[in-house]
Amino acid sequence: PDTITVQELANRMSERAVDVIRLLMQQGQMMKINDVLDADTAQLVAEDMGHTVKRVSESDVEVGLEGEADNAADLKPRAPVVTVMGHVDHGKTSLLDALRQTDVVAGEAGGITQHIGAYQVRMAGGERITFLDTPGHEAFTTMRARGAKATDIVILVVAGDDGVMPQTIEAINHAKAAEVPIIVAINKMDKPDVDPNRVRTELLQHEVIVESMSGDVQDVEVSATQKMNLDKLEEAILLQSELLELKANPDRSADGIVIEAQLDKGRGPVATVLVQRGTLRVGDVLVAGTEWGKVRALVNDRGEQVKEAGPSEPVEVLGLNGTPEAGDVFSVVEDEARAREITDYRQRVLRDKRAAGAARGSLEQMFSQL
Ligand code: GTP
Ligand code: MG
Figure 1 (cartoon, helix red, strand yellow):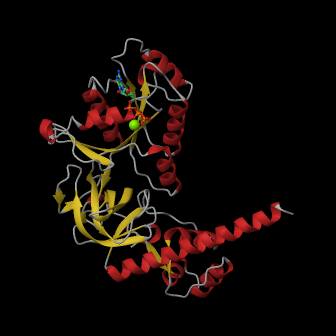
Figure 2: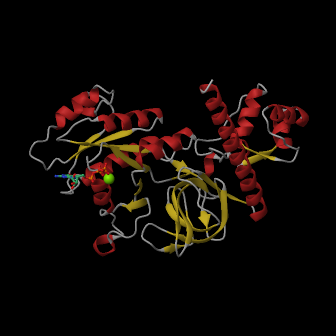
């Protein structure tokens, strides 16, 4: 459940429901006592009424007020979720491709399967790392703006022959704003004209201080095309991930984030999601942004149909009634009625917002013409 009724919200604040309704009315929202508020609205209302709001956990983006916190005892270690960022042409895609081929299960023949925007690499020791296909800075920003934290670690790719460039700096700023630790991959080390120390010095100016300069940011010299030091990079990721003590409760209804979604000719709406908590199963009723559906099939990053997906696992979801947006939060709800209720509400809010936006636009136009 990622919403709350007016009555429940009032109860939690020990306020009268009528006062909540009055406040909503002042904000232009006509609501009755059993109407549902999304977590963002509920938070705003609560704050307006002088209450402090504590969101249950980082991944509890919209789940907010009603999402139950997990007991520490139920938490199990989970794979780190890693995003590769960096300047144009510094080798993000090449590095992701090369890392993907280190998967011990996929092996040589399995190799590259379909592209699903995220994949998991299994290492010989049984460890796993989830890589998000570089979503572009825009998607990263949208997710962050919504409070959704999709990634645990950022791999900052800097070409050793080019050094720190504008989008390198952008990526640093994104990672810092999101408080996500950085691992630097100095790429293209097979080239003759590389100068990794120049990269380290340039990074220093942006307060990314690597270990050899007495900072705490790990850096690894790699070559994506020559597959050099990929094991070292993966070790660095696992080390960082140990420091973060990443955990999640797999034994609860699932929630997470939509990585990408599109309308597939044959299969209908297909969303690639990253499960962050709980276990997503075929047959679950899922709400994602303003869309919902009953999970008809789950397909993993190797194109295999699976029955379920746990924390940090990326998976394609089939069976949605519409196409959600990248960055949308998803969660499994009790039943279809509940799913309809939530998405109806969200669609209404979205329409109202759009209408308000349009009205504001035309007002601004009016004023600018005066
Ligand atoms: P955009 O997605 O356009 O931002 O680029 P990208 O960062 O994904 O870079 P991409 O992987 O497409 O690589 C850009 C070019 O650099 C390609 O021609 C790659 O073959 C080359 N390249 C990537 N990694 C290496 C490397 O380790 N060594 C050498 N010599 N070339 C590399
Ligand atoms: Mg690329």
